Image 1 (spheres, rainbow, N blue to C red):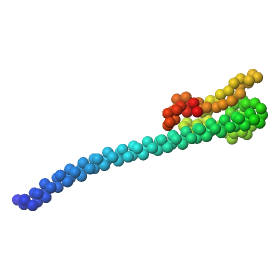
Image 2 (spheres, one colour):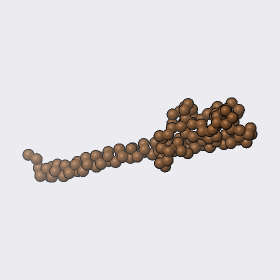
Image 3 (cartoon, rainbow, N blue to C red):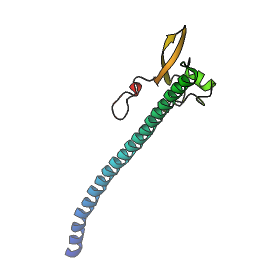
Length: 138
């Protein structure tokens, strides 16, 4: 026969086990939320740094176009001309795709039968920056 003291001890443990189980479930849900937030923050930091690279690359290429205009008196025929003449080391790669092919759109006009690059912009017209603007319009 089980004594009254041991029955009370068994009965008082059941609510404690239930409370521990509820706390464990709550902690598991909270931990998953924390992991999700950390992953989202990592992705935002990565996107922010890639956007900074695009801004810096655009600034560099535009500065080189202007420098070439100041040196030679006319705009270059292409970005590759800036590389060939030593204004750029290479055409910058797109930090999102990892390639320079198709990353930049050369803007310009035709002058004396040849195209001249007067500006450059990011070629992907669907990518949205973290601030909500189209990177294409920078």
